[in-house]
Amino acid sequence: MAKAHKAAPPLPNGLIYQPLFLTRPQREETLSWLKTLHPLWEMRFSKNNPPPEGDKQRRLLRPVYWLGNWQFACLDYYHPPEGIENRCVRAENYPKFLADIVARIEFVAKKRLPKNFIPENWTLNTCLINFYGSELIEGKWVDNARVGEHKDFEPGPVGSLSFGDRAFFQFVEGKSTLGKSNEVLSLWLEDSSLQVFAGDKWKKQTFHRVQRVEDKKSEELGPVIEGFKTRRINFTFRYVPEQHIVPWRELPAPLREDTLPYMQALAANSLFFNKSI
Ligand SMILES: O=C(O)CCC(=O)C(=O)O
Image (tube, rainbow, N blue to C red):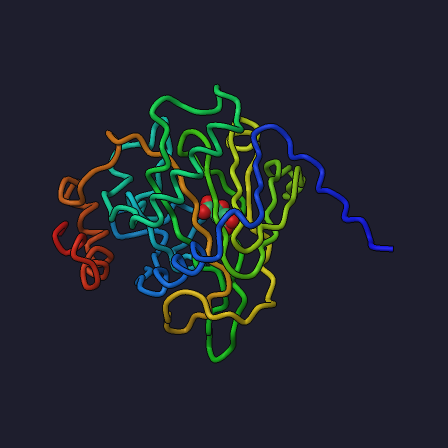
């Protein structure tokens, strides 16, 4: 007798998970386009934004690329209500095929989420592309495919697309005095899937993190990055109100100084960034 597949239990309010959200041609087109990118390895801090006491300068665990606006780590990311100015630097628009996918994500979110989870003017105009994999450190491949617990502070639903090896994704409650976080909900994010999370429970009351990424497929993903092997790529789409996105030239001088090397690296491969500096 054929084994009956158990249906996955429904997800709580504010969460959507759709495996195989992308068609094969959409997946192939996205993967080909990803190979043309030149992601940046950013440092967390800078000359004018040095590490606070008890913290130290470090490189992010993974290379990243942003679309719509670039939130440089050393500008401390978009963090309303107080951290909204000079955090989001105008970046390249979505290529057409991606804009079409984003329109579908917005449609799904608006259709399936409670109306009050969606702020006025909400549109997924910002995208962070994370490259997860292993880094060559002193001759050894070190698995850095994870991201620690954090919140995405952009208002409204976040949409997330995954490519490559699947990731173990968790929502957790903040660290207790014993330094441990309580798991609230875990799910595997698979290749070509869409995840949406929205509402106070998933955006404000819990943190999220990627605990690990499987190492199964041996598919070569993304562009060649020296000393790095990518095995998962994730897009997180977010909303930043238009009035909080600034052209790079309008940043205050110290912030331009801190981000100029990144802008120059981007400009070397992009007409948009070339014209922006
Ligand atoms: O890779 C993922 O699935 C999550 C990425 C993430 O948490 C983020 O970009 O804020």
